[in-house]
Image (cartoon, rainbow, N blue to C red):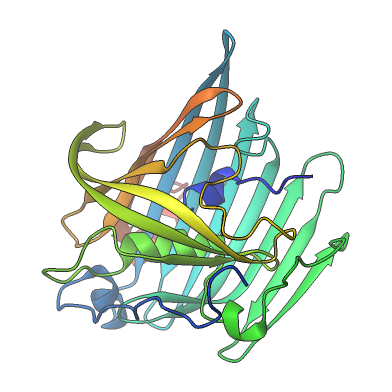
Length: 299
């Protein structure tokens, strides 16, 4: 059975063919005033982010939504995500999923320590629990995977990556100093089995209008290098499963120095064009968010 891209991981976006040597640049130093630098300096923040998916299967609309609640503290972070999709099988998996990630806040990036993925597809309903350190990882899946790929990801490869949630959010939040390509990358993603590098190419600027943000965005085209954890023969394929050509991602340059994907467009081989766009995008002081929740006014 093909391994498909979940809505949440697609926003990451999901994730040996390359040399086992890592060629990705280190995270850039955080310029003064960037969001992660401010968090490290003692200004906890919450990011609330939702993506809606739209497609047409013949004349029947297919929909999906991924929500992300990110709490950033000076030393640690947590991300909680829920994914609900309808009618997007074989493109963005039509499962109900709950995902959670946690780890360490650094001035220029986030780094995974734990990741849990629970899907409810009515079949395997698999739960994956991933723990990562600086030197290795452990993973438990229930039910177990039939195999871990050919080749399987090594400890040394996996620890250079982040889980799918952290990969997406750290990509949005990491600072882009002057002169650095905002598309950046590669984005290194490890979900406990599959290790993938997402390669981004800057295609200039484009006008974008979404419910959460409108303006001139940066257009990045995304292809992939399947590094490990796939079936034999699948490595080195540069397209996302079920997607024809590069995935197109549009980054909104925010006032706080972040570059958040507000639209993602894919031409698929099953249902034609699928568009994800930001429904909700806001940043707020974490103390304020907590106070609102305590008074019944929060989410």
